[in-house]
Length: 79
Length: 79
Image (cartoon, rainbow over all chains, first blue to last red; front, side, top):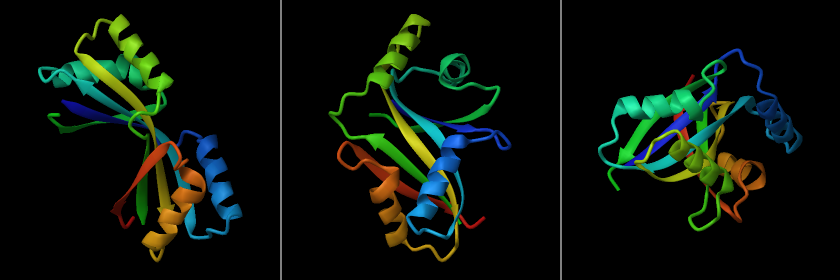
């Protein structure tokens, strides 16, 4: 089973990497960009019998820092 | 308009970060994980009149390294 986990900074948490990218885009002449936030994406191939609880636990224990980050689990399909 | 850009390593490109996460998950006792790949996610708030060509150009010029990375542009909706 393919699982995609999207980890993004919580709203309000400063994102210096996003600001740098925003600044760089402006420098390249893209004026229409209002905001940029950078996140992480973890693509995993897990055993088909992996439950939602186990995936959630992986996120909380290792993949995301829940103090400053949100995560979203997306099941891409059985592969 | 909210746009989400998913940047991931091309298949075959070595992903040491993914291997480290995989190893760490195994160390925590999650045996069902077969593969882990780490990617990047760029969430942008852009002007509504930003065209697909401009978004594609941003990816090619700055957001992704097309030599080793693939990208996918997802429009999340007008915000």
